[in-house]
Image (cartoon, rainbow, N blue to C red; front, side, top):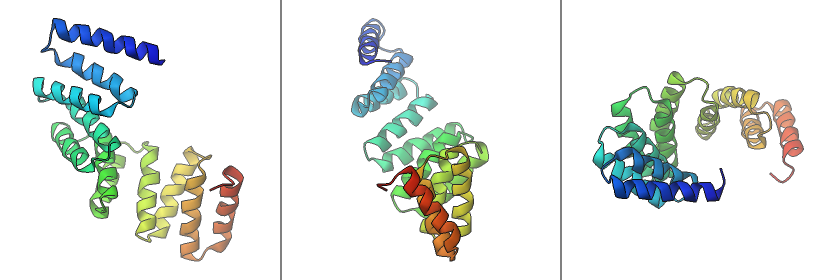
Length: 193
C-alpha cells in the first residue's frame, strides 16, 4: 500500500471516530495504520485508547508492546506482553517479543525461557532460531548455537550474519574447518560484513 492510501485510511478512521468515539476497533485499525507508517507514538496512543475501551483487546496489548519495542521501551514491551500472555498463554509471538525485550535488557535466562516457549507453540517461527542462537553464542553454548543457526540458515540461506555467528561458534568449539567454510560464505554473501 502506498502513502496516499494510508493517509486516506487515517482520514476515514478520523471521521469514523467523530461519528462513534467509543468504538474500540476504529482506534485499533488507525493504530495499525500508524504502526505501518512507523509513527509509533500515535500507534501507541490509539492502542492505549482501544484498551481503555476494551480491556480484553489482546491484539492491542500485543501491538502496543511491539510499538514500545520499536521506540526503545523494552520495559513497557514486557508489561504489554505479560498482559497479552495473561489473556492467551499460547500466543507464540508475545513470548518472542518479550524474549527480545529481556535479551536486550540483559536478562538472558528469561529471554531463553521465552524463546523456548515461543518455539514450543510455533516451531516454524524461524526468526526465533536466529535470536536464540545468538543468545546461545553469548552464553558460549556452541553446539546449541550451531543447531539453531543451522535451522535458521536452512530456511534463510542468504543471511550472511547467521553464517558469521555460526562460524564464531564453530571457532569457539575449535572446529576451524567448518568455521572457515562459514566465513567464506559470509564473504560470498556480504563482502562488507
